Length: 426
Image (cartoon, rainbow, N blue to C red):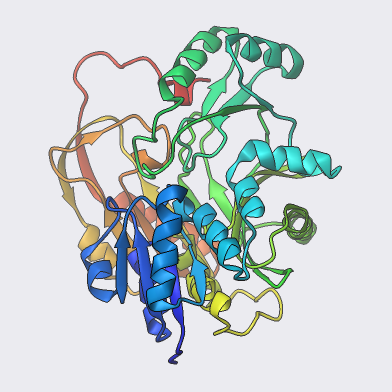
C-alpha cells in the first residue's frame, strides 16, 4: 500500500516509524535527542530533534515544519508524546484525541476527579492529593491501611509507595520529597514528578484491556491477565486471552467501554489497567496508547491484529475499522526475567530460546558486571520471553519454563541485606 500523505510523528520507537513507512507515508519525526536511533535517522523523511515535551519549543518548530512539509495529521503512540500530539492536532484543527482527554488520562488525579464529577465513582476509588506531611496522616485516618501513594503522571510503577501502617509514613514522606520536582531517573526520563495521589489499596486480580476506538466506537481487542506480586510494583508477566468466566469477561468489557466514553476517548488505541474486585471492575489507570511489556506482540500472535499498525494507519484513513471484538486463534504470554540482587557473572541461553518457532521474542538487557537491583518497578526487570501456543494455559506453561532456562547467573550482593525500598514497603 502507498499513500500520498505526510505525518508528523511525535516521539516513538523504531516500530512506530517502521509501520508508517510500510504504508508509504512520508514521516516528519519530532524526536527527543535522548531517544533518537540510527534507524530513525535513516528512515525519517525529515527529523526535528528537540525536547518534544516543551510546548514553547514544539509549537514554533511544528508550525515551521508544516509550512515546509505540509503534514496532514499529528500522531504519537508513546507516553511522553501523547499530550503534545493532542495539542498540535487541536492547534492545527486536525481530528484526533482532544488535549483535555489526553491530559486526564495521563493525570490519575484528573481522571478520578472527572469520573466523580460525572457520577461514575463505581469505576475507581476515592483519591486525594498529597499536600504536606499531615495529609498522609489525615488520609490514613479516613481510608485506613494499607494505602497507595503514587505520582499522578508517571508510568511503569515508578515512584509507587505502599503505606502498610503508621510506621511507614515518615519514609513515604521522605521519598515524596526526594522525587517531587525531579525528572524520573529510569526508563521514561522525559517526565517530571510534580504531584502525588493517595488512594486506598485495591484488592483483586489485575487485568488490562487492549482496545481501539473508531470515531467513538470502542472495540475491545483483548483482555490481558497480569502476573503481579503484592510485595512490589513490577509487573512480572502478561497472558492473553485472560482466563475469565464469561460473566467476568463481559463485566470488564462493558466497564471499559463505559469508562472510555466518559473519559472522552474517541479514536486510537487504549490500554486500561484494572482490578476485578468483589464489587466489580475498578480502573487503576488508563492510557491512550498501546500497552507496554510486549503486549502488542501478544495481541498480534493471539488475534492477528497489530495495534501499533492500526494506531498509525487509522488517523490517516488507511485502514478499515474493526467490525467488533476478534476471536482468539491461540494464546500468548510474556514472562519477565528476574534475579536476586547482586552482580551478573554470566548470561547464556537467550539465542537458543529466541530461535524457537513458538517464541515471539526473547531478550536479556544485562551483561556480566552489571548490577541487579532489588525489584521495585518495571525498570528492574532483566529481560523477557514471549511465546505463542494453542491456548493461554499452554502459553503460560511454556513461557514460564523457557524463562527459567534463560541463564543469568548472579553473585549475591556482599554484606547484610539493605532495608526494604520504600517502593516495596508493606
